[in-house]
Amino acid sequence: MNSEPIDRISTNQTVMFFVNFIFGAGILILPRTITDKVKTPDGWIAVMVSGLLITLLVFLLVMLCKQYPNETYFQFTQKIIGKWLAIPLCIIIIIYYICISALEVRVMAETTRLFLLQGTPSWAILIPFLWIGLYIVLGGINPIARILEIIFPITVLFFLLVIFLGIGIIEIDNLRPVLGNGFKPVLNGLKTTSLSFSGFEVILFIFMFMKDKSKVSKSIMLGIGIPFVFYTITVVAVVGAFSVNGVLLQTWPVLTYIRSYDIQGLFVERFDSLLLVIWIMQIFATYIIALYICALGMVQVLHKKNMKPFLFGTLPFIYIIAMIPKDINQTFTMADTIGNTAFYLFGIVPLILLVISSVRKKLNEKM
Image (cartoon, rainbow, N blue to C red; front, side):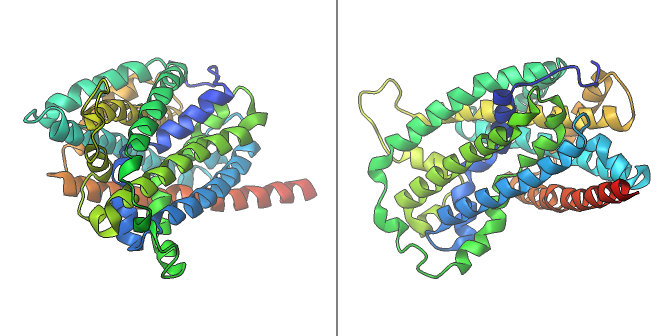
């Protein structure tokens, strides 16, 4: 496959990349992780503040991308800080996306083994998942965009359905008092909730492929806004149902929430199984985007044209890293480490590059 920007994606498909990459396995544990940090019912406020901060950050990333509209982050970084600094940075980013791919497939295997296929070895779940993803990514960015357009509406429909069906078990008193301990607990939760939006940096790699770059602001508002609404609704529903102390006792609070109500007369009785089937598709979407970005990075850093050897070569490493955690707790620790790395790689480094690029541009204009 040629790595040059021949393929183009529409504005709606750009939104799909944002939403599907931000959504991953994280939403299934978000109410517990945020409540653990905040220790009050105000986790939903932390989600809202984080969403606004991430939106601002993405607009700054777009300012950087607009200076190099026909190149990805892997390419224009070399122009800004030179090859000797840029290439090690790009290698770190490639490793980061290999680890993201591994994390997603491991969480998928854990949830599938726990709730759907008890007793099935992890490798038996991982390997088909890895190969199907590889098959799609081999086609390039357009097949990925099209499958994201299929996955997204199914996820939205069923997720909102199972959340709102449980509205009867939500106790408003569990969400009170609002800001009872002031704003400090909310600040404690900002880092955790910001990590839940990791994936926002995808614009650095897909801006080049956008068909209509003038509509990038619309893509950002929708791409960040949709997860923002989903996360807020989820935290409100789960904390409202279980209270702060109840949420902290759950490993998978969203799945426990769905198991906590019973709707008679509907076509399915176990909504948690239905949600998991849908959410496996969502984790798959995150996996194929991460796999594509790491292969794109290898192609562009090494100035090659064929992505296929890199994709096949990467797959064993993804499998090995996915099998490193011994249990679900180590998997969560791995997720935290990756999330913290994202904060520095895409929250701080691109802003430094933006400053350097802007200063250099102004100096060139004066000369």
